[in-house]
Image 1 (tube, rainbow, N blue to C red):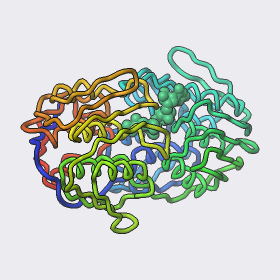
Image 2: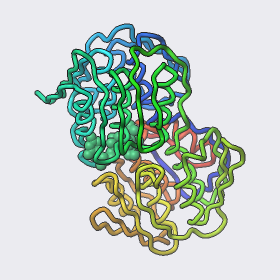
Image 3: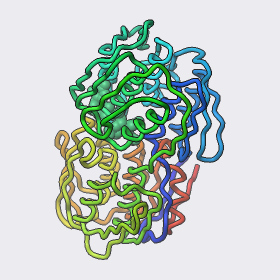
Image 4: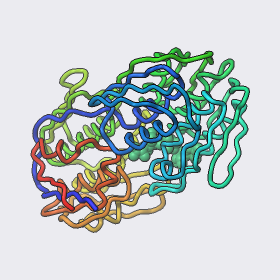
Length: 418
Ligand code: EPU
């Protein structure tokens, strides 16, 4: 199994180009199922999760031409509206095809996603929404079967809790429904806004994305469109932390600083200097010592759960105690035991971690458990003395494009082994 080896203790200096957002590209690919015409997507990052989604689309009947970061996708017909177990078990976001399939064909059969390293992650709210739009939804033999043979009908869906892919799935279901759909307590993430932009370019009528109430007026059909995916705010946030943690000087190009406000504010409190060089370029430096800063993960625009593990790696290097409260996923602390193997002093109590910082970590062999936990371990490895080996590199490859190349380009001693 592939591993990543890091020799810690180097300052990171230089420029990094940020890739397209994995979590915006996933729903955008699913949205191409809503039309028989050609959809051109640009700025698709080369990461494993997107290859999985492309594999699923092909299986459903899509033809995909790949040209660097561009994809030209045509799904003349849906051959069979089924997302099989083999694909859904490797990537839960496969459930994003549920809405588009029911909307386009009146039918979908999608494997029920199992548990995952960060929590139970059910998709009951996607199903609740589809049922509100008139689909009959039942579960049989590990599959969800949704049917609306006469088409979906607009309705008001109030999410009892905010769900990002649930909001996206329902938006895609509603664009071809009869009449108006109102999504209340919708997710406000930039990825939701990006999807709405693509859907509107395809002829949909979606209003209010980015706010808690989204209104969708159904249309009869959607057409082809061209769309460029937004920059990956979590990749950018991870490199901002890397710059701050190593006392480096990093310039991040092709970022959207407006998507990173909560992370930037916390980094500044922690003692990093962050400058918006121009509207798509950020520079991070640190010359002062790191201050302990508490965070609580929240839905956007709050501090993202996808930056929690990375924040912990930073706080280990800060003088004094800080607290991390995780409110989105019940089990997203798998990195804590691994960080402890490197010498971190972190106490866990329920969904709250207390980090007693100011410790010099020492390199060790650690195990990646999920994508963002792995990113936290990479950051800890960059700050540690000696060699860190991160096992199960495939977790990182799911969502970070050419991570070791980007890090090596700014002076990190990192290489792939095994
Ligand atoms: N939830 C339910 N029922 C549902 C849906 C969600 O109870 O039907 C719960 C979840 O279990 C969780 C909370 O609601 O406790 C929020 O989950 P959400 O649905 O918002 O998460 P998601 O849509 O499955 C997306 C990202 C995640 C990111 C979360 C939170 C994609 C493809 N994935 O997941 O990204 O952590 O939103 O921001 O967009 C990652 O990139 O590493 C990643 C895990």
